Image 1 (tube, rainbow, N blue to C red):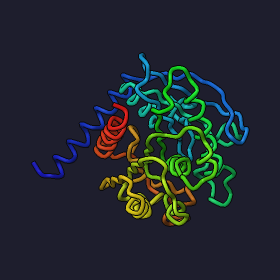
Image 2 (spheres, helix red, strand yellow):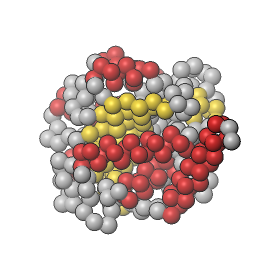
Image 3 (cartoon, helix red, strand yellow):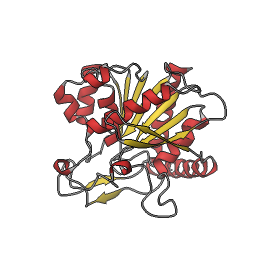
Length: 285
């Protein structure tokens, strides 16, 4: 059997396993309300394990928001967010998703040019910090056992939320014990001199032409973060459903106006999820 055939078989096996686990273990959240640091009333979804959580992960959605926009899951958590919630709840973590878009009357940011967006990292940071403060005050939570995780625009929000140079961050009574960012945009943080206030892991796609890995690799080298770049992987490589597609309606990216590629690499997804579990366990076990 050729190497390509072996790789194809592994890809298919991982895809089947991911789909089976996702459909078999769909966790259900509770909706709560809290106010962002800027006063915006937020909708927040809380997933709880059966027993006292070993820690709590505040999870930050990307530019497309939390919810599926087409198909049988329309209006519900999209597959990527649901799959992460299922995995982490299965590991004994509570997972808390603040919705930064719909409370502000915005459905998505992905198709908007950067200079036309009304929601920026300032708002995402304030939402994340308010959520961390809320979690820390809950009787079921431990303020010393919290993490923050995000994807793309939410991955950039992870950086903003853990930037020790930000007065809002420095002023908070609690902070995340660690941070995980899937394919964030790192150019701005690299330019501004980002300094993390907690250990950071970045998980990147080598072929990402939406939020390219090179600035994140350079940033990671400067600040001593853990960085993993997955070969043959585009943006959204950890999605449990779909295929890689060229999204021509996305105006931003490496080649503005030419679209970007996004879609899963099941092998990279499984490896990245294992890395997430290991990174969390190293602190919270």
